[in-house]
Image 1 (cartoon, rainbow, N blue to C red):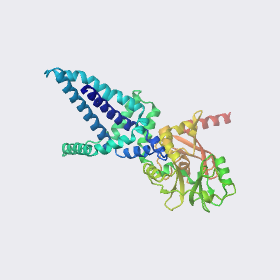
Image 2 (image 1 turned 45 degrees about the vertical axis):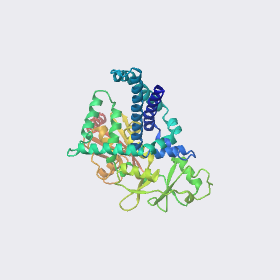
Image 3 (image 1 turned 90 degrees about the horizontal axis):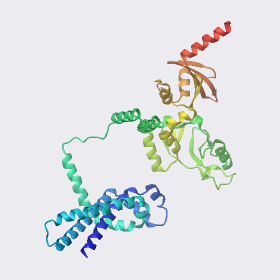
Length: 419
């Protein structure tokens, strides 16, 4: 009987240890997606995940209590069987160590990790009972640990995590030694620099927006969506500077074509151009908005930002360059006007300062001090810039060539004409 009871406690210890692993491994996204279902177990799990410290404390307390209980019972049983032999503690250690390791740690954690979602779902109400029963004990346990930590830290300067400079050095070393590819390093750096980016740098500017007036029909909006290949279109009142919301394809799915779109306009929120996008993301998530408007200092709409733009900013910034922002032609390059100046600096090893502009189109306007025309030329550093395509008040393409090679070509052309 004692052996069975000891085995039960050891298996219970494995249940608690495995449950801790399952709790940490559950798919949170799937959990939140299932909250709308009538199954109360998902709501119980959502409640339990609001108290990670308390739950982990309860699981640890349960694990250790069961293992200690199982060990004490087995020790008592073995002591009776061997008539108080002084080597009983040694025998207990030799016998129980592999058993506890396998059945109270390794096997349960492997099984519970692989089946975390269904196990947490099945035992959700049991976990709630465990949480409520053990809460007073683990509360004292957790508070005691925190108190001890605060006592030992008193008078000591807390050492921070690795510094930004140290992490950058680690990235460079990893790239030099081949542990990281160049693209992987750029991806990590783009995330590191994320909080330094403002809304103005990420937004789609007003002159590139595809918008629709609030009095237009659903049919016109759908036609515009198909032509622009956008699932969401901003809506303005009277002038495009006065954005009032947006419509998306889902809301128009069952609408009549002759209906005015004003019945389907979704309200959004407004942010200044200087808003850091790490804070903007938090606000977009809390307000559950997929499109927001960016306003300038005069209150007019300067542009829009969608959730897709923010994803692109994180993971696609350096990929856009390879996707056609820069084209090589012999010894020259053709860059799009929408290319970010920082990306140009990185690719061409330049140091053009952003003086009120973000893109190469803005740089051309700044240098020429007017709206550029096709064929206009200016020079900066070791490069010669020629506007190849400018229409509808937009600079679309710029030819970038070396000043030295450009000068050499002019000399060759003169010699050819002379001959």
